[in-house]
Amino acid sequence: MLEISGLTVDYSGVIALDQVSLNADTGKVSTLIGANGAGKSSLLKAISGLVRPAGGSIRFDGETVLDQSPDALVRRGICHVPEGRGLFPYMSVMDNLLSGAHLRRDAAGIRQDLDKVFHYFPVLKQHRHRIARNFSGGQQQMIAIGRGIMQRPRFYLFDEPSIGLAPLVTREVIGAITAIARQDRCGVLLVEQNANLALDAAEDAYVIELGRISLSGSAAELKNDERVRRAYLGL
Ligand SMILES: Nc1ncnc2c1ncn2[C@@H]1O[C@H](COP(=O)(O)OP(=O)(O)OP(=O)(O)O)[C@@H](O)[C@H]1O
Ligand SMILES: [Mg+2]
Image (cartoon, rainbow, N blue to C red):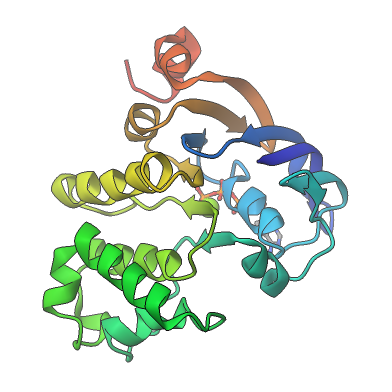
């Protein structure tokens, strides 16, 4: 579904991605793990059209999407749930969620997807009229994911959704992400620094170091890889 080949991102001399190749399919979670500054967010921004790569190719459903605007990519079905969430802090949960559906006109579908968000995250339904800034970090992450669901995308990019969350909330958030892939049959690229969590949730995995993919394979393989165990799992 998503095929990336030889992708290079250069911020005026800072090479954030160097010839990165990666594939992600529908119906499962693919994860990209890496340390601070490894280039994870740069990859997601390149896919969603927020940074322009210096070289390489990105194909979605077999078609090149390299030169499209972020809006056009949303219309094609790519949803980016960014690092830091990017909510409207003084708007209600409901209005934040509905902002994800602003390109849609299918009222019945929008209602259906709202039900889906509240099914995944019941706490949001209960407090849907409260403003977003009054929620905990974990709940704000739920709002950000919910807003993504309201786009009804076919492919999700999640940038470190677990960062700063308590273990119980993390489980809920990751549970929704795996359900989006496996039950809704969407594609998911999950970027994480928390390798333990990501390798447990994903089917396929990539390790990125200083802008280069250093390892790839099934998540189970990488979990048992000596280098991954030492550098990322603290074993
Ligand atoms: N707008 C920018 N201008 C210049 N350099 C940048 C810019 N954005 C990122 N970089 C650099 O590119 C490299 C990769 O950054 P990126 O944000 O993609 O890493 P990351 O893996 O997402 O890190 P983190 O885990 O801290 O979020 C880093 O060296 C970073 O300093
Ligand atoms: Mg990042």
